[in-house]
Length: 133
Image 1 (cartoon, rainbow, N blue to C red):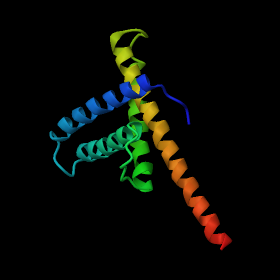
Image 2 (image 1 turned 180 degrees about the vertical axis):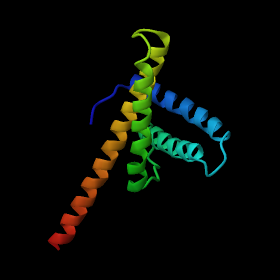
Image 3 (image 1 turned 90 degrees about the vertical axis):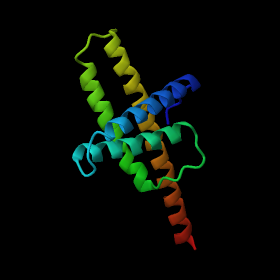
Image 4 (image 1 turned 90 degrees about the horizontal axis):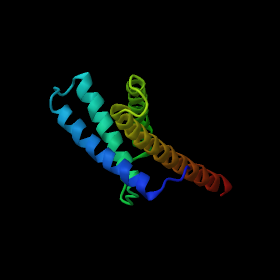
């Protein structure tokens, strides 16, 4: 896994927190059962998982399935933000704002993928132990 400095992680956690708040506010504007509401629910869950992983929260109660399901919303944010960023000149306020979001989501993606890999490795070790018995 790539190494990130403390400042990068703190910035990412801060951005994740504010994004969660914004998504939760937006979710209230949509009726439950609508595609927008579902999209935001999945995005919020993915952001909470990311924040927990980046915070080194030892009480992470997310399943392997939760982790795998968290990846698509994070990748979607990266793709949409990258597309939006491309409309602005490098160095502009809007470009830089999008760059911070992209960086935080790339860090989140790395942490989720790393956690998935760790869990997969543990499952394989467990399987090998059982086969050896």
